[in-house]
Length: 223
Figure 1 (cartoon, one colour):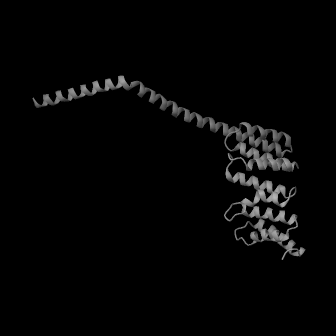
Figure 2: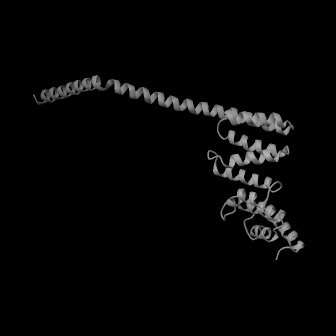
Figure 3: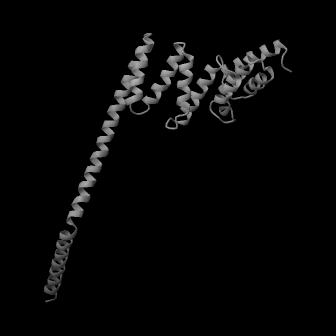
């Protein structure tokens, strides 16, 4: 009898759970289905985006290499046009790389004004990674040495000279060159000495700084 009672109780419990499930399904079934559909669509969408992004990045890379090849073949105008298209609709890091390469190619063509403007535009674009913006500032500063005064060079490079900054030695070099060009030998000596006193300065930068210090000493214009 006890076994029959246990069986009966289990059957009643199963029936109650079944009835409760039916009621719950009638009440919330559409919600469950909707959630499941959203989950499937979300996963599919994410996978689709990854596939689309990967394919487009690959295509942008191929276009970027093709543009570099055009520049290497001295087809500057065609290369600039190709880089401009990548800037408009390229994916991943390629639009930024195209902007940098455009500015560099403008400098190679001798159009320093356009190159400086391009590098300055990159350096002010908050959508561009900080290090890339800093590199653009430095490139603009080096071009400005030949076309502008010390203050304009300093406006680009001085912010990069702080201890610990990755570009500090090159930034100090360009400021030293600008000061030397302005015939401010004391200031030039100060910048070049900071480089030669730094144990971690790249060898080529330190060597150029020492050459400039020798020139300054030979001029007799700095203590």
